[in-house]
Image (tube, rainbow, N blue to C red; front, side, top):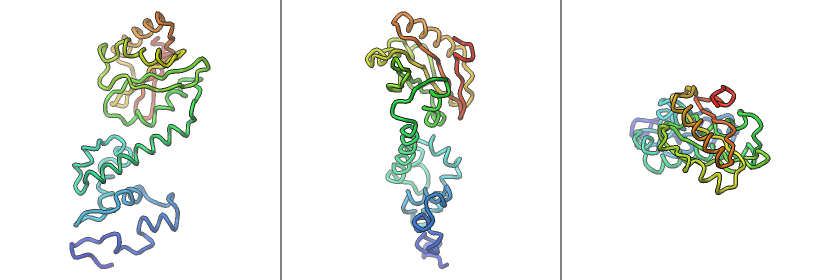
Length: 231
């Protein structure tokens, strides 16, 4: 296999049976390694790097899991990545998240804490900052919407009852579930988490909106504050 004038081998110079696009067409997407779909998304490399080499460098930073947590700006800092390539990768990650959510059903029913955690785990396990969300439920415990209330470390000013209950009241929710993530990966509640939960529970009782639970998402795990006795 001859190398190009720039000293590296482009994908076009690879044998056809190991080129990512041809391999997908001949063997199916399931036959591809993690590196190969990335190379297809990137389409091209640089003057000195093939798309496969560029994909390999991206995966060295933590694999596909890390890619879900990498911002557009951080991707652009990767050698050989421009705005277009970075945008393509972020769009692909976002599509996978939305597909995962849609596969769970258009209006899932929450029967146990695991049902609620499963709806947000794929997205919230990868966030690098704390996101506080409210899951709005109807009288049949079906999910109406999941709204983001704040982004940043939890404190009383960020999760003021006025902001937390604004959308549930607007959407005529019957009850709600509080959800936030711990970027550290440990879902154990802090003292601030406990205080805020009890404050919001009391405010909800005054408004006639029952808070069923507060779920803390860690790294592919979660904690139900209701089941753990913090309510």
